[in-house]
Image (tube, rainbow, N blue to C red; front, top):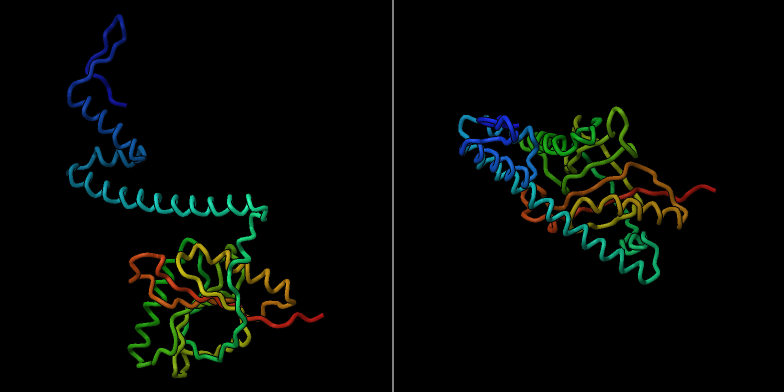
Amino acid sequence: MIKPVSVHPQTGYRYYSIDQLETMLMIARLKSYHFSLEEIKEILGSENQSEKLQSSFLNKKKEMEKQIEESKKNLEQLNQDLFHLKEGKPLMSYLDDIDVELVEVKKMTLLFIRKMVMETDFVFEYQDCFSKLFTQIQQQSYTMAAPPMVLFHSGEYTAMGLDSEFAIPVKESSSKTREFDPGLCLKTVVHGSYSQLSDVYARQQKWMKENGFVNSQALYEVYVNDPSVIQNESELITEVYCPIRKEKR
């Protein structure tokens, strides 16, 4: 709280200087932009306040634009859910609209990095591991045979993280590669945000249960295009594969 220049002894009315009033108005403006008290304190205490304000506003602008985009998507999804409910359909009936096809995937040779990854570290590990793999490809003159992929060897995150394998199919074999033979798989092609992937996995699990199949190997995602060069996430293309076998009775 800003300390007033003086306080009237009888009325308790606080008197502030012009500079103090400007600071109070600035604080109110920053609060309206949803800056935290800690962020406001940092801005006010900055040696170059104008430069700090500009960089903070640019970051806040990006944050707000992202929130607006997410709100638009949520509103669109909400409208779809309302439509399904008005039609008398269950809320999760949209899963049935997700395409699932049976495909036979040939054996491939993978250049890979396998490690336990915490959920909060996944984006960093994705970038770091594939950067290392692409460097190996260049240094060892490997030939890429297919787009990058991530295999998930555990079904959920634990205290140790998620058992993840970052891999690139290559034509050559070496001590740093391994063979992977998925065989019969469920395949779903996803256009757009990665947020849809959990729905895809739910749909594939439902299909297996209804048709008497079980998962046989690590689930994996193939990233058809590079997310680092995509301007809009709606342009993303991801193939989701679930290796399966007939359930034994």
